[in-house]
Length: 164
Length: 287
Image (spheres, rainbow over the protein chains, first blue to last red):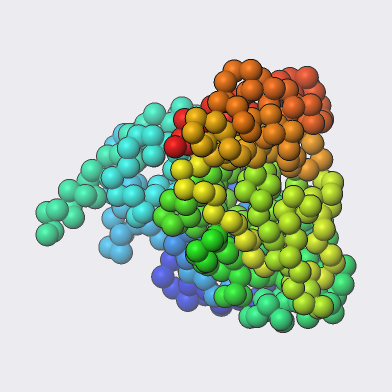
């Protein structure tokens, strides 16, 4: 089958490429764009390790064809850090609160938490757990992940107040 | 898991989409949110030669309040249903059900139209549509047809939707103000289909149940409308004896298969518990 011309914004930059329509977004990101932050975990839309932000929605990029994402704006974990290269508050708080052990789920976890906090800047613990229920972690038991997200919410809202 | 190759189409209008389906026949499949179809394609259980993506068709989006009810575009996502204050105020069972579907990422993609048109007995929204007596609009080359949800489901993945037709709109009559509803679902984990689930929509008048609709998810080849269970409640004060009768009637039509969710008797038993809890919750919410 013929390859199609794909154009999208990835982590703020314009990307153009040729790809088969059946290429999954996760494979396009990892293999054609060398963005290996999002991981292939289960490959069955359960684990959330492949989570990226697509037009302001958290999606599992193992279950989206590159053709469907044509024209969209995509953010991966590589695009979460601040422009000057310093870590995003969420990344800092995952480090601070030890919100990871092996780290395999972390890119998806942080990318999901990023969107969660955009939509709900002050989530309760229950809301955090519900909000990250599409992301599996087999190491931590989630306790420190929830702590890290809550701490990031505190820092981000504190920053906003300070700026006002 | 790499799906078989296909040609990709993204029509800008419903007419163009219908034309593409007519042109490619059974080689073509429409894709909405894709979270049922794409996993099947990755397993090569589905191998459409032409994929018709509906995402650019504005006519398939949005929630319209028509006074007597709602017209919901088929491409409306589960998340958009959860976020619609108007829908939740008039018909809270939609939000309650949507919040129990899959996980946050999937609710951003998964659509109401896909969920009801797919014909998977594990999907949650068909039971809600049976309880609410929804009507689906389907557009094909010959025009638009109206299909009652209660007549729509034939067997697993088989519905009244004909080849070449696209389910475009879900029409939901508003339940009377003061009605009580509940969707109660037992699942093993986030993202799993129900071991059994039950939807109940009822109204009370002068301490007696004036109307009741009961339906079941994932305990048969299709979602099941338990007409006898609803009838067992009407006229009662929703006392224990009436609820027992309704539960018995609902379990009586359940035909779950034995699977990793449990043996047949267990799943029937869970279905009964779900019906009981849904009736009790709906009764508490009714005014």
